[in-house]
Image 1 (cartoon, rainbow, N blue to C red):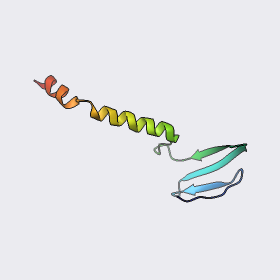
Image 2: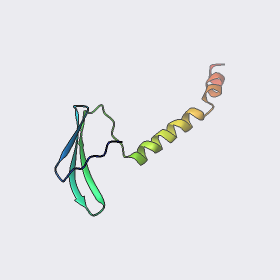
Image 3: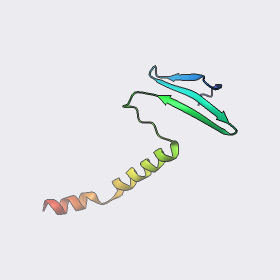
Image 4: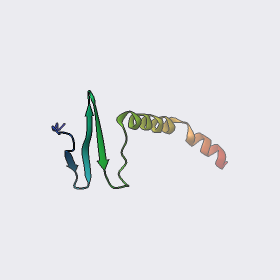
Length: 72
């Protein structure tokens, strides 16, 4: 992991097309802004993990048997 120090209104550039800016710092919270192309998905980690868990659950459903039954 790369750890960088930034102050309010300072930015980091990722992959030449994503800019992460520190917008505000209040106590133990940091507000960041992310400028990225529309095709780049951006999620909070807890949301991303929930999406991954739901996708995994969906692939574990016995859909192959259900599909085979439909095609009979």
